[in-house]
Image (cartoon, rainbow, N blue to C red; front, side, top):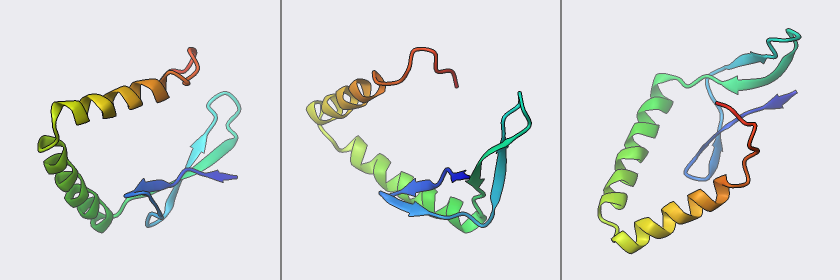
Length: 83
């Protein structure tokens, strides 16, 4: 059974427990996802605020480069993928 972990600051982070992910067509369990507790949420918000400061202070050239890399990596997503 696969577990879909959190990755925060390039590190795998476990949750306080896990939820089961079911295939609605078969009812089979496909994966486990972690549950974030209050401390993990607080930590992630702190990290996100720091990242927002860095993004705000980056140049247009740096932002364009990051956006371009994201767009290029998402082009590998199958066309039939839906959120």
